[in-house]
Image 1: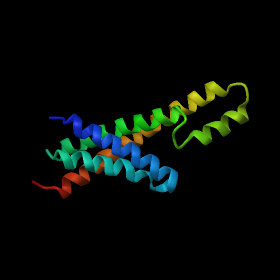
Image 2: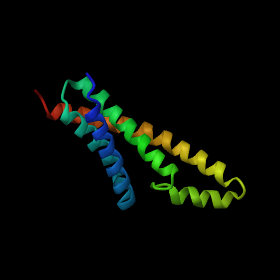
Image 3: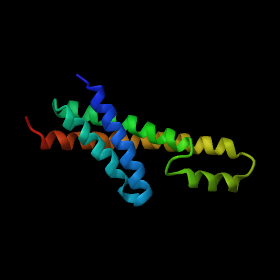
Image 4: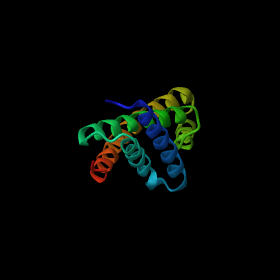
Length: 128
């Protein structure tokens, strides 16, 4: 059974850590989804497959949160979008929306995979 409270909490941990670590030391951003998936499965431990699924759900929702915040100008990639938009000229709105959407899709995939890995790590360390 999926525990949505744990998944939402893990998603918020994923989004917060990914954004903070991405701004502070960029290569450490991968720890956000790993820890978010770990937290999700730590709260509800049901089995290895369930842990991977719940960790992946946590990562996907966390990636969606990060992507939406980036589209609204609060994320890691805002400076990159503005530089790219300025170099293109008249198509500023379209390019920033396109790049932000692509960034969101990539973040959802990466966060989902890393969240699943974090869930598997949690399930292997928390044996019942």
